[in-house]
Amino acid sequence: MKEIRDQINSIRRDFQSKPISKKDVPENPLSLLHEWLESAIKAEIKYPNAFTLATVKNGQPDSRVVLLRDAHEEGLQFFTNYSSKKGEDLVRNNRVSMNFFWADLDRQIRIHATIDKLSSEQSDAYFASRPRASQIGAWASSQSNELKSRKTLESRIKELEVRFEGEAVPRPEFWGGYLATPNYYEFWQGRESRLHDRIVYQLAGESWQIKRLFP
Image 1 (cartoon, one colour):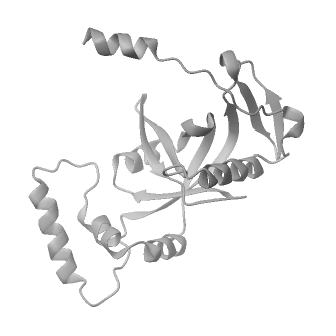
Image 2: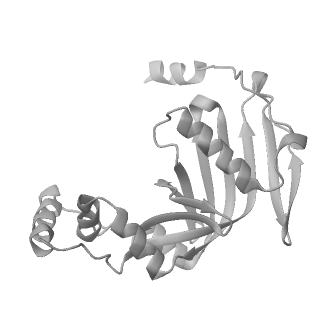
Image 3: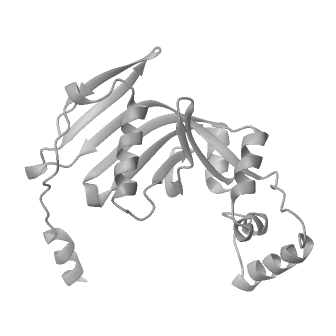
């Protein structure tokens, strides 16, 4: 155990990344988010659209990685089981934090947002675009609940494959999308000697205020 503790303590890597300047960033953070997502995709990073979603229930923070499926002026979209732990948390407190991290680019984006459900039509459209196996998996999983045996899940899958054989798989009512409406973005660019660039967008009324933070 001491060996791994020493190894963790000794991990060091300096950052040699291109700087970002407050005067050079766009007025709208969505434009910079798109730019950084495009860079992550071009760099062929595995799951460039993955982000950590943090929720709070009864004062206890919880986090997990989910996938971004759209980013537009109204907000950021992702999809999940409404009856999952995250779904239950969001019923009680719809304020979340989101974090994108691309280690290969020495970049991360921190976001504060409020969450609302997407319309049934939007959720239906996305569900219809999913692979059939994923559609059936959504029906089979009582997400976040205890599973006594893997065989139970596999049996559910087989039953559902028979149930929906020869027809389109409909979206279950307990599964759908959320829209995250950001009010805060922080774009973090790793720099040498840990003197990182941190550019913040804070929503004030209908406009974004831009500032730089100490690293």
